[in-house]
Length: 194
Image (cartoon, rainbow, N blue to C red):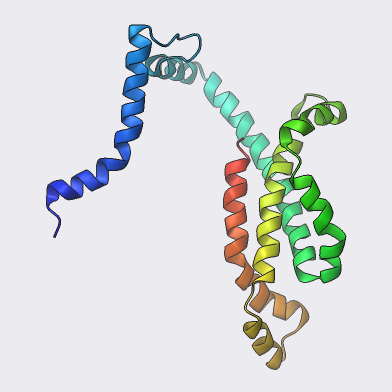
């Protein structure tokens, strides 16, 4: 049985490294080993946070970034789900779509930025396009994976009970693929802020 001190240490142990890094960072900035022009001190970051919060500027920029991320996620997530369903449910859909989508997925987003600037300029549509592109792929891949890895025994059992088409999709395929789809959504939510 663990003692209360041991339980407390286990609970706070994950905080040792981050607190240590911030402490060393602040000390290095205070002593002058680390130029604040290269990396602002933690104290400077907190002061800037309070200043921008008090003026309302931080909240305005946060609202704009959130709007951009949500619109891009909605577009990219919807496309990823639709394309994943098409390629996951149909061998012809997979043959038609998967190779092209996998090819685009492997192109680094930084390499696309000059093309995106040419296509959309530097306004909000370019940023939303990049967010949508970043969120499309995890949802597509996990939707396809979830559908393709459904237990075939469940599908055969549902068919033996007379399910086919849309009822089979709603009662067997979608619930079976949903955990994998949600993993894709979780990754996409993280990527929409990059």
